[in-house]
Length: 258
Image (cartoon, rainbow, N blue to C red; front, side, top):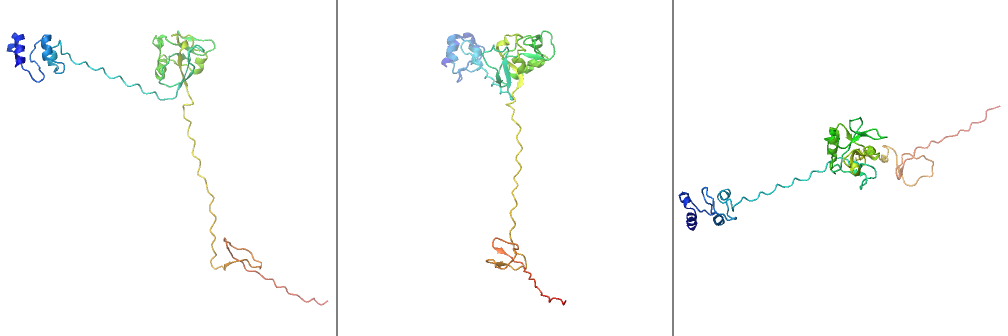
């Protein structure tokens, strides 16, 4: 009731409007409130949007929209490392080395055939460039390997090889890259896993010796050997079988008469 009296006293012209005071103290109708009334009607903790903003734009502003979350970092590029070498031998603070494909380095391109405006050094068989029209007319800094490779392919060229960079075939081709590590197209062989060796063949074990058995119907004698001459037949660990002995009979013939 007190709220309605205050509103009527301050705004006589709004007497014909429907005025209500719900729990959130929202005032219906296209009414603009002075700061003092705004402080009373639209307390920051009780402001109901968008009504309070429409009625009391001076004191009830919408809550600030939180900034969108930062995008996740890109996943590392899969593949074998590539060699990065100084744009001009001996000019870089860093040493030539193998680099992961996701690292960021500068770009120079080499071509096996002549391209207008590209430079060919004495003793080299390729033409090189860093920022010619074929490369978009701009320098290329901080590119990963895939980006660098695409830049050169779009220019009708390729990334220089490790030997070409270390042979200074791309030196002085622009953008101040003589002091930067430059992507090469040379792939690390050490990063490629060797083919797995074939498993060794299974070992062949010698067959076990045959188990000694007595011959059916044969006389088997055990114990110490006899002093009689005999030949050893099929023999087990403690069993042997003699064979029959053949006796030779000698007949004495009388001398023939002379």
